[in-house]
Length: 170
Image 1 (cartoon, rainbow, N blue to C red):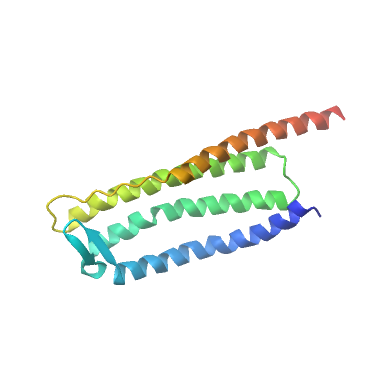
Image 2 (image 1 turned 45 degrees about the horizontal axis):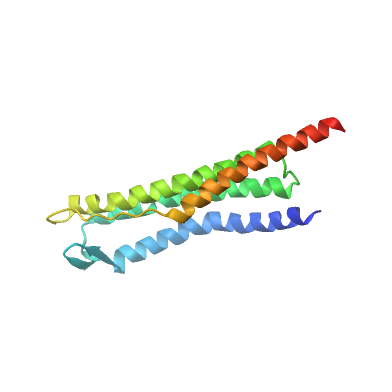
């Protein structure tokens, strides 16, 4: 058994734990934040418990949207690590999984930016405010990491093609 297979098995176990831990942990954090935290509004900070149930529900849904994408990322990563653990490194399925990871990172950035931008209008809809608060956020680092991962997937696909050609020559 190669070191790639050994470490892939270990990482696959870790990712399997994260697949269950991330949604449970995020749900607990969101519940605690909505029950005991403060919300920054244009007229000042206010306890989240004083918000209407509609506002808290909107914040919970929008604050959890990116966790769904994160779960799909973890499931894709787990599938990729299982391929590696089986010794299938330079196969088209691995290149496709790497490309999917890159695209999912870009989707994660977009969903997170959209959710953050929609929180202000959602609060304005349910809370008495003169104008909607504007929250804008764009995560540059995951965006560029997603682009690099897509590039690595193209390189991996080319390596798969080269290995296939090599296997046919022998």
